[in-house]
Length: 390
Ligand SMILES: Nc1nc2c(ncn2[C@@H]2O[C@H](COP(=O)(O)OP(=O)(O)OP(=O)(O)O)[C@@H](O)[C@H]2O)c(=O)[nH]1
Image (spheres, rainbow, N blue to C red):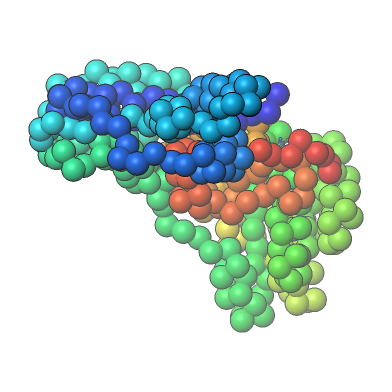
């Protein structure tokens, strides 16, 4: 089953736009108007070909057209038939509307429940509702305005506020460190199984393809097989790994990798660490030591989008322990809800750097607010590859 990325969130936001729009139409006693002009047949067929429009009228029209073709005497589609094909009813407000809290209260209450259901963190839901109220209550909508556009823009603004954090330019950090003759050091932290090792490999692949030299540090000396897993990724991607034996001190391995990179003028050190539960005090203390000793340029929290609210809680705990700089949210390709992608940055006040969108080395995309807004409100449905490279 192909997951529609952020599918649940997208559906709920779409429903809210329709409900708010209908409320405004009703209050403004909107009347239906038909389009001034009728498209000609070529435009209709073109629309059908270009957009695969299979709406009822077009399908019905094709059946009627086939029927006409069966009876040779009626070659042309009548004007009225054409008119039916492109019948796009628009509504126009009869009078100006001033939106009151009563007008939108019930729709916003429903939106609140539905966002919570899509795994959006409570603090984020509250912020979105508050922003919508600030934007919409008291707003004047004239007959020249398009209520649908007004409501979509209000929702987009509310979500943009949530998603916008200070942007971190990873390549800028690498270049700045290179000027000082030092490697940029990025340490990856998170709980077990979220995709740390995989994301390190994906970022190594991305940076290597951009011309940077990369070395990996096998800092997960805890989990059986973790060192070998990272070595396999490094081989596949074509970068080196600095490792010690299993059970060695994680900070020491990463420290050695940094010295190796310095000695050889390598641009970037990507350091793995053992997956750990935020509740495991000993492992959290070890992680604090790793950060204290290695002084990384970025501490990157790797969260699993499928974990929903748990990913937010874990990010908050890790942020309290070692001050996270940025987030990689993985398995977004498999996340039908979308709540964690919307919530994690706002909940900890740190930016999402990348999204993991599959199991190939190229399946790591730089996060961008406009990109996410477009995915939540855009028409296109993103299809991800289910191919596996690891
Ligand atoms: N669909 C999908 N799967 C992913 C993504 N990122 C990681 N995975 C899978 O998630 C699983 C765990 O990935 P790892 O990188 O081993 O996780 P980890 O955090 O290093 O795990 P520990 O070493 O136990 O802490 C693997 O099967 C990956 O292929 C992603 O973006 N999309």
